Length: 138
Image (cartoon, rainbow, N blue to C red; front, side, top):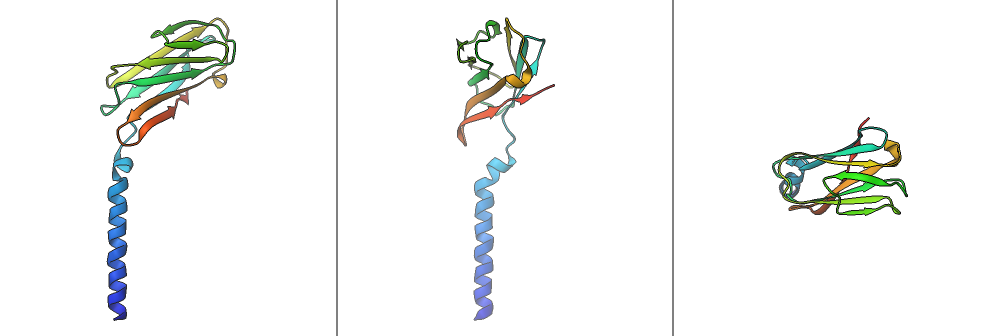
């Protein structure tokens, strides 16, 4: 009787582990569909490089946070919203395709890369609304 009880526990444990693996395997096996990197392109310019894999969403929202009161001179593509007082720039990128998307901006003042941050928000079919921070490049 004691051996049968251990056998049932062993089977139950294996079943539980298999269930956990099946539930989390899409997240474990799936590489990130979106990756972003923020780099300086001069004393007053920066670029956000967004790498999109085949499974990436077609619509992205890109946020850039700058020191307050930085005057934005140019953005490529055109930014959807610029708030110089808060130091934020927002782009809505639609119909993106796999590959690399570059988002550029230049300002009237110089800035340090450690004063700037960027993130990309998108809807992941498995995880819902997802936001990733852009890594800094030197």
